[in-house]
Image (tube, rainbow, N blue to C red; front, side, top):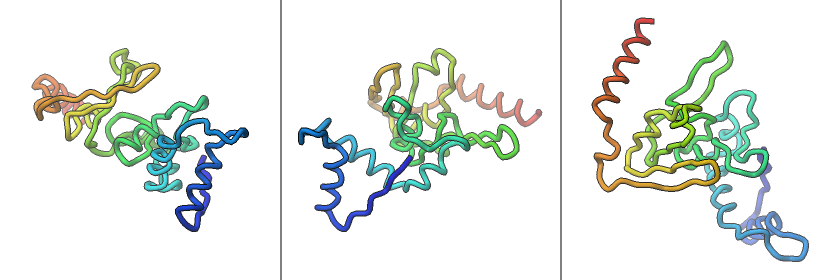
Amino acid sequence: RFAVEHCAGLPQARAALRALCAIPDGGYKTRPGLLCFVMSLALTRGPEACAADADAGGEGALTSQFGQSAQELVNLALTGRATSNVFDGSMQMAPGLELRGVPARPAVGYLSHLDALRYLEVGDYLKRPRFPAWVVASQSHFSVVFGTGPGAVAAAAADAQLREARRAFDAAA
């Protein structure tokens, strides 16, 4: 959940940020750089828009129960929208229940070890970003990998054939 504190200027904003990061002995829990980055993402999109981007029934939280990054925060950083899923587009599950995924190809992609284990399926938008760079999620951390040329994001011929077969099958159904 978001709490917005209105500040009259930069000194008041800095004081609010220091108060947020402070611990009782006057030190800091952490350097506020990451917190500033996350706040910048959330405030640029807007707290209400971030909450609306998330799936219905979700709280629109950008962090999970134990403070790790939620998928909404990763998607907000990569795509500019705090959607809850990594598939392409949206899926209508039932009347009034829409699951929101990634709306378009982002500049930087996303890969997950859970895709290889078939626990989820990362969509083509995130697998084939506009530039050959990906954030790779594992169980405990994120890594960044990149390719040296545009061929790294080109679809393989077999992938293109499979995509066309799926479209044809979906159209026939």
